Image (tube, rainbow, N blue to C red; front, side):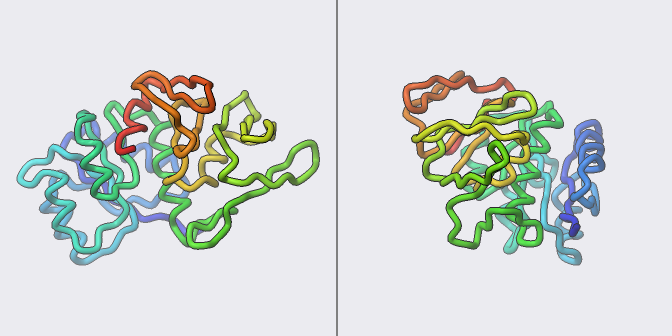
Length: 230
């Protein structure tokens, strides 16, 4: 399996260690360097190319967002910060995800899986560059076709997930992490450890809940930034 090369740009030693430890736990990530400021990261990127950068916003010398604007061909970026108010600016810069500190491993894994599915060398059933708008799941030993446009939300039920569509519900044995890796990140958002929603199906939302088809789904504490930029 081809690995996704990455760097960490973080001036806080403890935060840098957490990210370094997390990357070591993910088999498809290959860490190429850890840099305490944007200047050092710039020097590295002039000579070496990576596919992913974990970028803190409040860096010395040159702030994270300003640094990002200086890059003519930036890698995919996952913002790491303690300040949620920069989320909209981050998504305007086309960052892949926005992680709030303290970062939990589950949330970290969700973010890097988004990078994995968008990486052409690591595509699975759905191909972002193709015209596919469906996938198949196993339901009671039958392969059932699920159309993306029909999905309302996905709910975790222990070792199973329930896919709720406009037509009916489907129960299949897989994890929400596996399902999230198959879904286009621009069409679906993880709002809770147990729920993934279709963005186009949102009727209303607050910081605590999302309404879809008259059903109110909770927004998890560690996913408060998931609806920024909608």
